[in-house]
Length: 129
Image 1 (cartoon, rainbow, N blue to C red):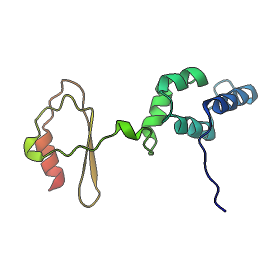
Image 2 (image 1 turned 180 degrees about the vertical axis):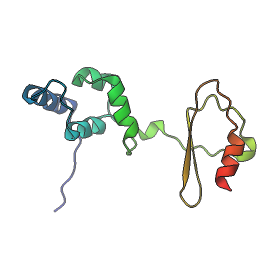
Image 3 (image 1 turned 45 degrees about the horizontal axis):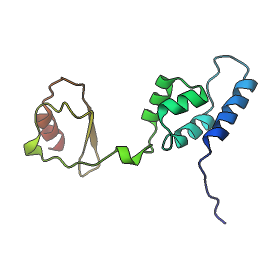
Image 4 (image 1 turned 90 degrees about the vertical axis):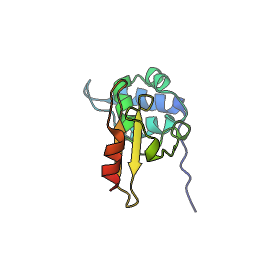
C-alpha cells in the first residue's frame, strides 16, 4: 500500500510554529528543518509576504531558503525560452537569470543586474565549445 504525501495547510504549519516557539529552549534557536520543509511546500500556494506575516518569519531568510531549495516552487514563474546565439545582444537588461546547458549536462548560470553590460555571446560560445 502506498502512502500519499499531502501538503500541510497554512493553519497547521502556523500551529506547528506556535508549538515550537512555546517549547524552544533558547530565543535564537534555529527553526527545525521539518518546519522549513513545510514552509517550502506551502510556497507554491502562498506568497512570501503572506507566509512571513502568518508564520512570523524573516523575509530575507525565507527568500534565501526558497532560492536555495531545488524543487521549483512555482512552475508558472519559470519558462524555458530558446535564444539563438546569433540573436543575443551584449546586454540583456530585461533578464534577471539565464541558464545555458551543454549536451553533456554541464550548466552555466548568469545573474544580471539592471544596467550592466555583459559580453554574453562570447561567454556562451566559450562555454559551449
